[in-house]
Length: 146
Image (cartoon, rainbow, N blue to C red; front, side, top):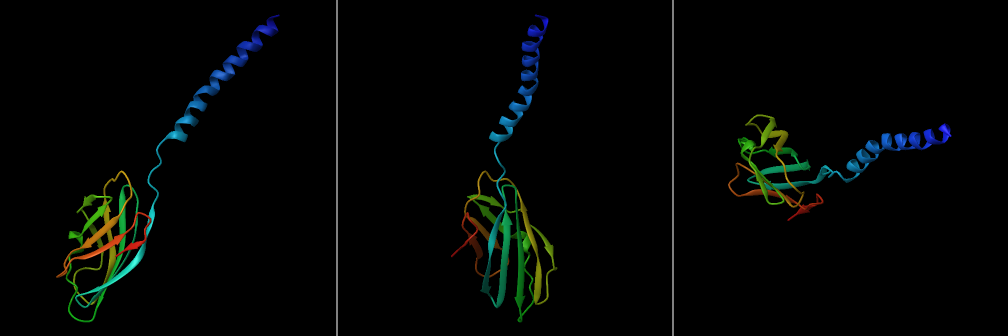
């Protein structure tokens, strides 16, 4: 008889011990996922005798763009850190340029923006320093928009 009483108590104890693990598993399965990193197709635009090539990645907290500038007339004096980024209607102007300094005929580097967005939508990168607006645009899926 004592054996029969212990068995239900043991079963209950084991069931309760597994309860926190089950709750943790449910919490992990319904926790919101971070926005996946999205690759942006490479685009090239010629403006003011300069060929500008941009490719990038973007997620819910950061965007990085690889940028190449090439010309054979004049120096490349653009301050790319003054560029602006818009993701799903949210504007960012805190770009950080890490790459070749101002001057010369060829420059390359990385332009990084840090900030949070609730969703990934249309992406628009406006580079600073040209006589006309130089804007690269991508769809939410990373495809070029014209």
